[in-house]
Amino acid sequence: MQYVVNQNLEAPFNIAMDEWLLTNLKPQAPVFALWQNRNAVIVGKHQNTYEEVNEAVVKEKDIQVVRRVTGGGAVYHDKGNLNFTFIIPVANPEAVDWKVFVQPMVTALHKLGIPVEITGRNDLVLAGKKISGNAQRYQDGYLMHHGTLMFDVNIDTMVRVLNVSDEKFISKAVKSVRSRVGSIKEYAPDLTIEAFKHALIEELSDHGKDKPIQLTQEQLNQIKKLETQKFATWEWNYGESPVFNYHAHEKFDGGILDIKAEIEKGLIKNIYFGGDFLGVEDIERLTPELIGKPFEEEAIRDILDDHQDKRYFGSISNEEVLSLIHEQV
Image (tube, rainbow, N blue to C red; front, side, top):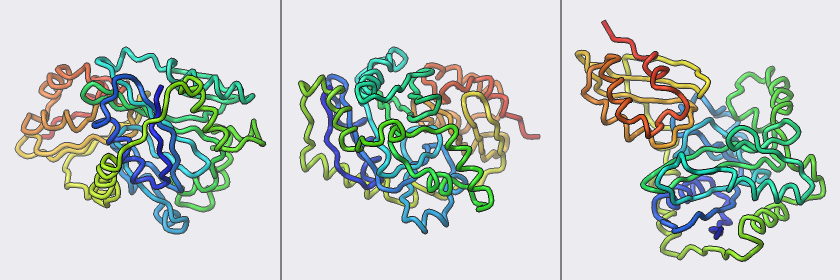
């Protein structure tokens, strides 16, 4: 695979680049990018930032907070993370075999003496501990799959900034996270993240046969504009919540789903879907279909059934979504 070169360490720019690559690059074959952020919390598309981030730690540690365009939960990035993005031209995202893309990373790690394994659909696990989290989004014939490889992350800062507000629980939380989250550096103490990145590029680019893609200055300017107008703004990263008079919340096997709606005379005036579910297509394409419709199970069921193939809620089923819809009396 060819790869996009990105040395920028600013999270708003890098998350903007991901969206730009998805919507503008239009490659004929899959491409990838490896990149890093300085201290940052990357919030899932549908999450309430205030509920996910400890603002006191954000200010203390000068941590950037950026909302990405994919679902899932909030993650902490620092220079001990190596992040990856794949952009894949595909008519049907369900047809993608992720092992084709994940396996070269596994091969590179094995060559470095790191016994990582693939579990589930695309998680990477080292000695039973997760070292990679990922999410995806499909748009107009292209699938973006991005995630992080935990090389040598500062676990203490990660736990404190991801909304552990009570200091007396931090020590316990750090121990809990360390028991579940792995670090590549633990298994290769002499390996640098630069050497690790080089090894991944070597494998993913067919040992250098596939050459890097250098974005033009005009393309970089477009990404910078997207950063400035969207990903560096308070409106995008925090945003003002509209007033809702209906709220339902539940945790399913496929993730947390939070529904807020403004109902007027039995009709949906505004509706918001939040949570850490891993939807494939953008939920904002569904919400306009619901505006003006009766806030009742059957009306919403018809719309969900019409869009079943979009997988807006990932592995959360339509029946589970509908279980949170209760007619207002």
